[in-house]
Image (cartoon, rainbow, N blue to C red; front, side):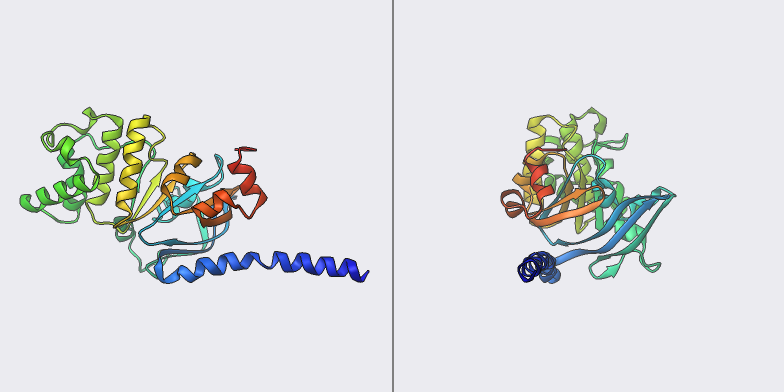
Length: 280
């Protein structure tokens, strides 16, 4: 019996090593721009997220991977509270942006969505000129002077690595652009209001390989100034462009680690099964 008890004790000791991964994430707290703690989310009576806790580092790319329906996009949309546009949503737990509780009644949603911008799966330019698409946010925030708007539009399109392609077409309708160009205009539109964080929900899934490569290159450039969280079904993409990767399954955060470690040495068998193609 004593040997059996000794084996059980060893198993428990091995299991108690898991919190060390969490504590390692917590050590980055001073470099974290968003901190998520014990987040639960329900659509009506259906729970979609379970006790999610993770810190999102500044000026890094964090990838969210997992099979369809696992809660990736739902989690992403909680970070700027866009998920609350669905009236039956309720949450518990906390999300802090720069150590401020985003669920607090004192925290303005408009301010949050300015600082935590969003780029969607399909390019969604407004039916306006390229210039007016990019200038839209600054105008909403009270910028009226043309010379200032001109500067913002140029800076934002340069930030989205598309200025040289579009500088002579600024007054053309954005709908006339290719899908890849439209997506980069949408990224420029997000940059125009000077966010800290850019959320990307499968931003290349509707794009051809050449446009995808351009957006991936852009993401690598943007992380010099912005913190990026990207949801992707493409594990190769996550491996190529992200610094940290989170694996979600059935609404739970299964594993969160440096990207190289997660792909080369996953700590959870479910992560290993997913990244090796056994399911998903």
